[in-house]
Length: 301
Ligand SMILES: [Zn+2]
Image (cartoon, rainbow, N blue to C red; front, side, top):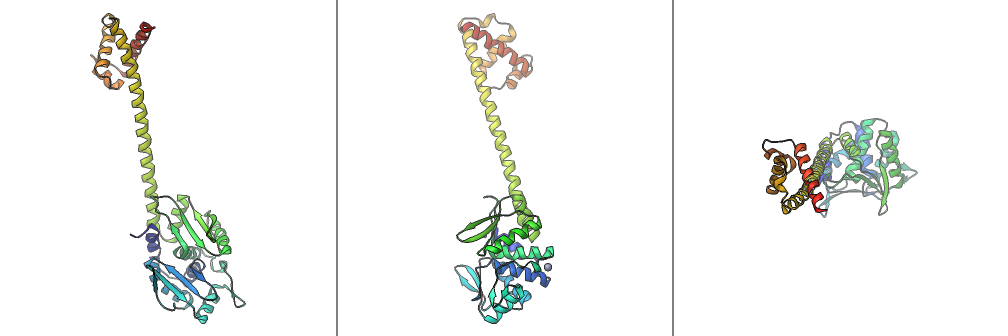
């Protein structure tokens, strides 16, 4: 079964690759968040079929470069590689990450001045090194990179875009993550996955509804307990009055109330009040029953 992350990536891959500026930004995001981006080569491992279809087109448009062989399968995942030095040099050049024959793992902000390019970069980073938790289980979206500076720079970029990610380290990887469902919804929508964002909103609405129902059930249960406690007290008083033969000396109204309670110990005040002849209000019956309890207590002291 495809995971929520997988579905989200599938949706993101439906965003058309149009402008070359955005293709380059997205491809740079992919590279900085993929399995390997070094002088020796590039390795991108993905289990998303949609992403593995998008990758060759993306790299062609961004860098005019193709993958070495496509794709190798590695336990259900697709592996894309580039090891030819000339291709690697062209990519480093195009990313602006080549320095004196070396490689600089940094976000190139010169490519990310326009909002469409910023979002394209995030989309690439997410497709390559991101994941989002099924909202039925919780709210969590993260970007994982092995490059320290990229992680810090992504925080800066996102803050600039109005998001406030948190940072953490896991197994020598650097992570930007979100736990707030609103941020996750906004980010997914902006990157191009509004359906995934809606799933999160729906899950949240359902959860709120369930919590509301649970609260009401608990509240009803507490009220039921109170009704039972009160009825016990009333029955005890009625038994005392009966034991001393005082029931018959009560007024008709009080005697009727006592008999009804004895006959229907489980009924609520409102239900019992409706059975009186003529029916009385809840507070009127409550008043009578309290009087019975008082009389019973007087007799038993
Ligand atoms: Zn653009």
